[in-house]
Image (cartoon, rainbow, N blue to C red; front, side, top):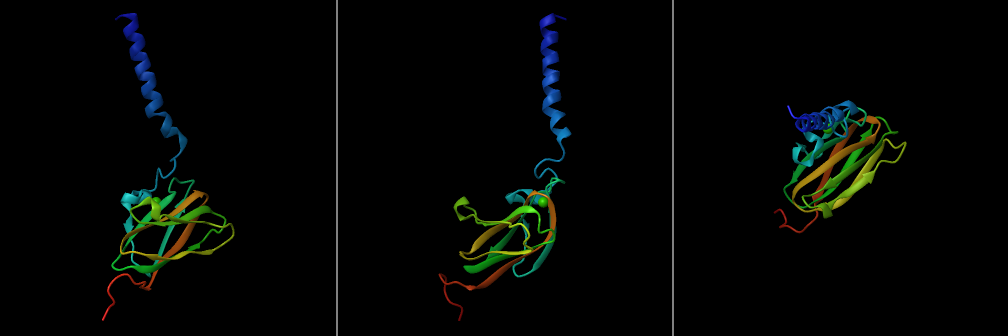
Length: 156
Ligand SMILES: [Ca+2]
């Protein structure tokens, strides 16, 4: 075997080691153990006006829970959350398909109950994300819809 080829192979193996093995040595990573709901495309369907119990944990790599609700008509929407651990460093977000529709609430230290909204949202799919930047907390979430905020035909 030529010396040059042996060196090249060694470099390839070394690169492979750092590319494949190293990332595994650093814990689960951001959303590394989130499950399918770690990305907006994997949002779990949620009903409106229902209480949803779940948990996010930065230390366990389950940083984000995405959910989706479908509005059949334009509605006044409020997202409510109750944190089990009010010391968590986290946030609540709602958005449509377009990034311009993003509305965020940064969790305030010590608060157990927080609300995002109300917003007048057009019909269609709306995505809600609960996120832990550091710390862990169980939570209860509710996506509340008021009456139609107009724009469509009235119900007779
Ligand atoms: Ca998750």
